[in-house]
Length: 166
Image 1 (cartoon, rainbow, N blue to C red):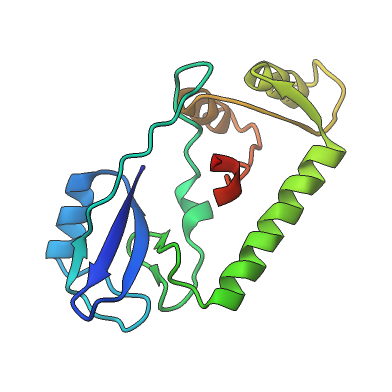
Image 2: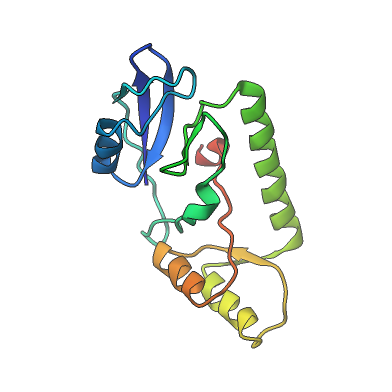
């Protein structure tokens, strides 16, 4: 996934996540992107600094399942792509949403065991009855998360909040 700073022809600025630069180009040229503020479909990418993410395992985080990204937030989510433009929500709604994500993360951390990079192994053990059923959280590569999902292991990505990036 790649995040772009975007702007409509009426100068409203917002952000959006896409699977690739070519996917943004295709969606924009087909008129499938719209401004969350005014609905304008003339959307262009803005110049932005690249984000370089350092990982102890050198791998990408697990991808959020497409169904989980479809928020159904009318006017903000493009129903054909399942994406929500960051900063496109009304400030109060965005603040409430971020607070709910913080509470979700806090609930996970306070009620589950951090198994770190052993997450895929431990999740499988629990799923197949080889270990005691308990709440766990940790890290998995995209490939590991996809394999777990294909095996029917119930996993939920923990969202990264803006302050987690600092």
